[in-house]
Every structure is written in structure tokens, then in C-alpha cells.
Image (cartoon, rainbow, N blue to C red; front, side, top):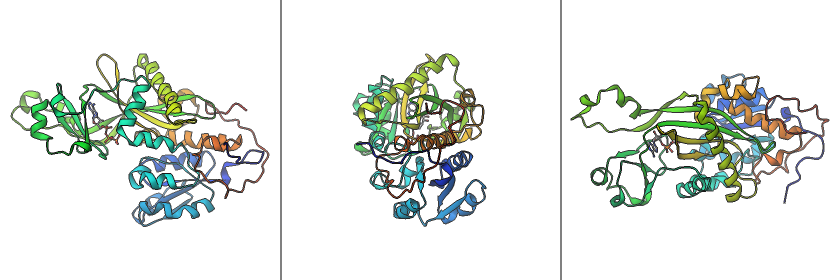
Length: 375
Ligand code: ATP
């Protein structure tokens, strides 16, 4: 049943605090929130305190000993009228269970996390959306082409192995415990990470920006002529070091857009009724035949968007002002407040009873770009 959240008139963003953990893309999120008129709060560890305090757009910092203590601060957050904007560190520092158990108002749909966190379910989701994925091998004996062995729980590509064939697997990877990795066909192409935003208020999808990751050492092997690599036991590794902006050939853009639409459509079937909304990223490899192979989906803001705090060529097409993904999230929350639709952008666990909603006559939602609700 739909929760009744606000009473009648629109709500003003300055009465609410947008908060996030001080890492990953927090600066972008909080800058965007400030630009949209929210009060901002960074939840930080002592090590990060001075850094986050040094930015004028961070109104307050809440210092906690460890990020894993974060759920204990729920009453404090609710008292402050906080709306949490999650990023990659939420899943890295908090268990899925803890993360889901929190009832602080939360931008996004936590039901999607179950599908995102499990590589098998993620694959089912993306395949149901009609997207191409690298072939997956379940047994070493099946390997008939180069594969990448991906350890579960690896982050930023750490510990991934390139394996040339079944024999090579025997030498290099047979010690790994089977349940703890997957073997995927190795796709040779350009890794392109496409950052999307889907608005539950307008039903519109936007491509916000794109990046390619720069990984060590795989992206540097080409600097040594292959003849000189001979006899040198060089193995590629995939540890992400940074991100580079990329713009896609315009002829590939329609496909990128359709992929985003398909993922959102299927998400409503697997996580009824609301599915995936807000920021998400499709991590692809584009082959010389211009085919997109999906490596993964991230169902939230990704760190590659940090390249575009001032907007990207794509966001500029939709907005006549700098529009980062972080700011786009804040704008969605603002538009939801102004149109009394906050429940449409928050997870259903969000406990809003503590919120006192003063009634304010709406000042209108005269904001440019596609993130404008039809009211
Ligand atoms: P993150 O959590 O930061 O997204 P991750 O640990 O989940 O990273 P992936 O994004 O799955 O890692 O992959 C890391 C890198 O490994 C990719 O950027 C790409 O260079 C390489 N890679 C992954 N899958 C494949 C594949 N099937 N073929 C070729 N390269 C791959």
C-alpha cells in the first residue's frame, strides 16, 4: 500500500538534510545537494574529518569511529530529517542485511540490491533485458577460449586473472575454491562505463556521462612491444587506477540508450513494482564489431561520475547548467518534495513518521531540463 507521506502543499529542500558516507562520490553528492538548496551532512571517520570540513558546501560533519558503526546512528539521522544518498561504499562497508535494515529515508530501491549483489541473478536480469554477456564457463574442462577469472567480493578488478586456455587454468587458478569465482569469456574491446539516471517522477531515462577505466597493468602492456614481452612472465592485472572521460560514437548512442531502457523495464518485473530508479551504470566492453558486452550493472552512482562534477557533454545536452549525477539525484529529491511525491524516490523501508512536514505553499517547480515533474 502506498504510504501517505506529506499532507498537501510542496516541501522546501532547505528543511531537509542530504547525507552520505564520506568517501567514493560523497563530494559530488553533497555539492549537488547544496546546489539544489539542501542542507548537507557528511558522515566521516576521524581520518576524513578535516578533508570534508574543508569544503564550504558541507554544512556539517558527523564523526563516527568506523563506517560499519553507521547503522547505530539511525536515530540521530532521523532526528535531523536526513535523506541518505547511497554510493559504492554503502555496500562495501555495511552488510547487505544491515544496509537493508536501516529505515532512514533512502534514495533508491533497496530491493534491487538482492539482484545486484548476486552475480548469477545479475546475469539473469541482464540477459532477460536482451543484453549480450560474455559466455560463462562453469568447469575448467569447458574452457575453449581465453577467459577472465573473477573472484567474488573483488573490488576494482583486484585479483582477477587472465587465463589463456584450460591448461593455463590448471597452472594458475586450479587452487581457487570453485564457489568463489566465475570464469567469463575474455572480450577484447574498449571498456565503456555508461552512467544513466532514470527518473521515477517523469519516467524518463537520461545518459548522464561515460568513462573508461584506466587499469594497471593491462592498459600499459601495449607500451612494451610484444616482441620485447617474449620470455618475460608478464600477466595482465585489472586494478583500477583512475577513470578517463569518453564520448561514444554517436551511431552507438541509440544502442546505449536502449540498453538502459531495457534494464529499467526488466527491473520492474524482477523487483515489482518500482524496479530500478535513480543513478545506475552499465559496465560494457565494446568490440570492433561495435557490439556491447555487459560485464556488470551497478545500481547506484558510480565513482566514474566524479569526472563530471561540472557536468558532461551529455548532461549539457539536457541542462543549461552544470549537472553532475550527484546534483541530478538532489534535483530529483527536490522535485519530489515540491510535488509531494517523496515516496516515489525513496525506498519503501524509509521511515518518514519522524518527519514533520510543515505546509508550505509551493513556489513552483521552474527548473530546467528533463528532471521536471509534469505538474
Ligand atoms: P568494480 O566493483 O569497481 O566495478 P569489479 O571488481 O566488479 O569492479 P569488473 O568491473 O567486473 O570488476 O571488471 C574489472 C575489469 O576487468 C574491467 O574493467 C575489465 O578491464 C576487465 N574485465 C572484466 N570482465 C571482462 C571480460 N569478460 N572480458 C575482458 N575484460 C574483462
